[in-house]
Length: 185
Image (cartoon, rainbow, N blue to C red; front, side, top):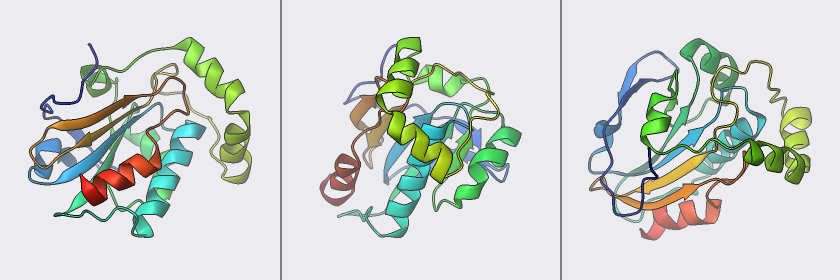
C-alpha cells in the first residue's frame, strides 16, 4: 500500500492489546493521538523508543493544549510474543499486536534491508544502549525484520496532521515534534 499522507482520514482497525482485549482506533474519536508502528516485539530500537515514550508520558511531556491526548503503539508481532518482550514497559498507553502485519501494510509500511543495515551500523551506539544497558535483546524475530517504523500525528477529527516514515530501523519522528503537537496542534 502507498504512504498515508498528511490530510488523509484515518481508517479504523481493531487489534488486541497486551491484556488480549480488543482496541479499536475509532475509540479515540474526538481525541488527538500519536500512532507509532514498530517492527517485531523484541526489536531493540523499538523497545528503546517505547521506553522513551513511556518515560516522557509519565513526566507529563504529552499534555494537550485542548482536550486529551494519547499514544498508541503497534508492533508487527503475535500477542504472546508482544507480551513477552513489550509487557515490561508498563506503558500508560495501548501497546497492540498486529500479527502478520496487516495493519502495518494498510498504513504503508516500507520494507528496507538497506534501512536495517543503516540502523545497525549508523546507530550502533543506540543499538548497544538498547541491548546492553536496557536489556532489549532481539531474541525472537516474529514479525517483519526489515519493516521500517512509522509515526502519525492524528487530530481530534481523525485526520493525519503529520506522517513520518523512518528511513532506518531506529529512525522515528522527533520527540520535540510529538510534544509540540500535543501542546499546540
